[in-house]
Image (cartoon, rainbow, N blue to C red; front, side, top):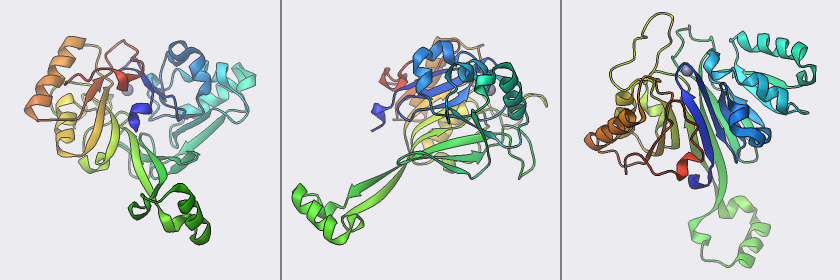
Length: 294
Ligand SMILES: [Zn+2]
């Protein structure tokens, strides 16, 4: 099912992160270079979900909104207690008055947003920014798809008969509603609770560093991040279908990243395909690439 999703991303720690899922159509984060990277495809985007206000995750909004503002879209969803977003909205509505009708929607931990038929996005807190509970500054996102599926006992009936039964007894009688977590996006975060990503089809997770335990921040000015080692350990203990690694530090070469992924994938016996968004590179339609670990 997810092979159908065209996911294109740029993500380098400190510089810029944006991820486009063309079919939904949405952006996860909005760092520098979205508009020049996506060109006309950026116009299709209806919803933007920003994980937090670090500049590398939001600085592409200016040009993106300037070029694509139209009635009701795009909707910019942002963590409720980040004051950067209202400040930017105010600035843009003066600087580019035609953008003043853009929807800026403050969201918080636990919010569920229906973005189109059968597609919902759940926002939930992560621990990148040390703030008390109840303050919403850094979010992860999970995208859910709801589908109705014919109950197995009716699978062998012909379609006329199915329509007939549905008309008599209601569609709920012959089908079940199935809800799947099709995509998970970590934003910037330390690895903590493994369970939150269990049963995610495509997990897009940051791995700023290759080695070590990142649960303590590098300095008090820098938020908490994840290492490849920690992400891979988690993935070896939960059930997902595909892993896309993002937000590597620019200090790492492509070869070093690939070698590290292969080594850990082997030692932890990870079977799921792993894809990487390398520093400084836009990766287009990433799920169609060869996985690093196969
Ligand atoms: Zn970042």
